[in-house]
Figure 1 (tube, rainbow, N blue to C red):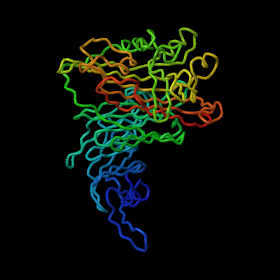
Figure 2 (cartoon, rainbow, N blue to C red; figure 1 turned 120 degrees about the vertical axis):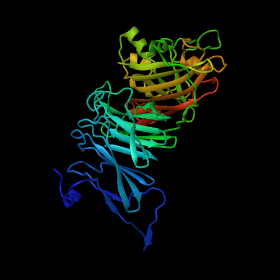
Figure 3 (cartoon, one colour; figure 1 turned 180 degrees about the vertical axis):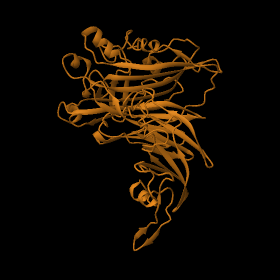
Figure 4 (cartoon, one colour; figure 1 turned 135 degrees about the vertical axis):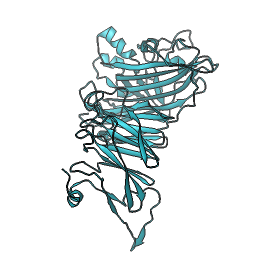
Length: 474
């Protein structure tokens, strides 16, 4: 039942305008203090307990306000309101709701705006299970606002609350999810990067920001910089840069290839050791990529393709619980080549980090090498996401070991790596070489955002390798 206007004003969520500042602030100074004018915003159809004002955002002369408890078509389906104006003069221009609004979707829990594009999170959406979550993109033209897209995560599942936080800058959006199930039974956070090309949005990367399971997952994006908060570890992940790849003229439909074609070839390339044999980077394991941070003189070894997991299971019966999902997509190009896109999501990936230039002999600062784990030490395990784009010779051409691809290329002729994005985060124990007592809890992250290559490089790409102390009970 609707309340009277006075009761509405007392009980409903209200927005104070005048303290949210965009651009320059025309303010008066008196006695060394600024004075502000203010006005109040509320919805034209406001009702009791709509939670109007749960989220707010502003871009130039447009304000967006979330009301996640409104019952537009279903109880608690949620909505968001668009106001336009300046100073203390604001009028409601539109009410935004999801095209498929359903009970307890909580649309409007989070809102963001950039220019004429609004992003609204609906963490209660249940398309992929209860509270799997989603986010909706709206675009304004004059006084009209239309839904452009509904975004969901590639790994959407019940309880993930995708859309608990959102941020947008131009054609790039970041969406937080605060309850990703991990094998330990705990809930951790992730953030997802989406990019708009023309009118189409696609997921470009996943950032596993382990350590925020007791909190929401705050996200922000500005220009080419993504921020992801992990309050449990009192850290903020700063991820740069994101540079969209050059336009590609595709002809014909995309073709899906079996993921096994990529996984089975990892670790098979013979990297010459200069003595007529093959160099093994992490004996006794097959080769897999090490991520080097030149600035910090660290190397992170991460089992992105499950090679270490397979080795210890087949030879010693030790199960890390590593699981890999993803896709291999091939697109024919107008110039006769094909663009192959590989996306991997790996959970419980075996990880360790050394301080130095040699994964075999430099001191370990995080996690443990495989020999120590086989002797009883705890493995450091985490999640990682890999996305690579590679120009290949023709449809169905053999795929490549990443050590081969990044170290030697594919022979020139316009073939080879176009871009690479890799993010990883693992929990494990720290060692005295890091300057802490043995066994202290810690977190290691690796970030390589959209590496662009025009030809083969002599070594694996430089990545951002961070190791930080955690808190007990992580």
